[in-house]
Each structure stands twice: as C-alpha cells, then as structure tokens.
Image (tube, rainbow, N blue to C red; front, top):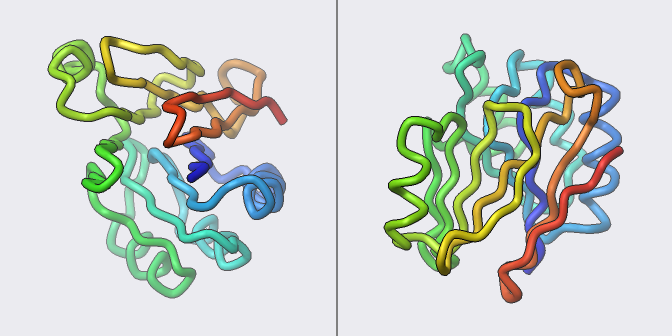
Length: 160
C-alpha cells in the first residue's frame, strides 16, 4: 500500500489540484495532516480517486463546515488525530510537544504530523516519522508532499 501524505495546504487551490492529480496515479490512500483552512478547499478532493482522511490543524477555524463539506466531498475528517490500527499508523497536525515520547514508545510503526512546514523523514527504532512539509510553499518556498510505502516502511519527500 502506498500512502500519499500532504499537510499545510493553506488554501492553495492550484497546488492542491495538482497534487490530487498526481496522487490519483501514485497512491492507494491520501492522508492530510491538517491546515486545510477553508471549506472550499475540501471540495477539490471530490476529484480524488483514493479515499481521503484528514485531521484538523491549528489554522482550521470553521471545523463544523470543514467536516460537513468533507462528508459531501468524500473526505473523512477525524478530528485532532487519526489512527489506522491495521497499519499501526498515527496522524495528527502538531506533535511537537510529545513527538520524541511518542516515537520512542514504538506504539506505532508510522507517525505522521504537519504544522512545522519542514519536510522530515526519520526512523526512531521501529517507528517511521514523516512530516510531508508544506504543500502551500509559503514559508519554505518548497511545495512538498510524501509517499509512504507501508510494507517497506519507507517514505520519500516529493517536491512539486
């Protein structure tokens, strides 16, 4: 299984549209690690072929409307965190306060977070940590996402 991971899209309509086209070909499932921002961005995911799961970020203000529009667009928004038990995967937006404790606990094999806008892939024991960086490109100047091969426990950062 290949998971496409995006985060911090911050209303970049053209970039979200481009990454959805790519992930339709590259991924079996799409995960969004927060900061969708406005409900209208969720509607773009109607064009996604894989199922889409998302969590809220610190800038996602109108959570109720995001959730409702997400349902209509086929996006399952899970609240502040998402657990995929069968894959031993945990995703949230801002993990910085407890990141090292969670990674060293080895409770999950894959941990995904956003928030920092810094792309990062690293291994802590048997746990793979992935931050896809920022899809918006506002802070770093790089528009990035990640692909995770679940069976190989390997992730790659890809720049648009």
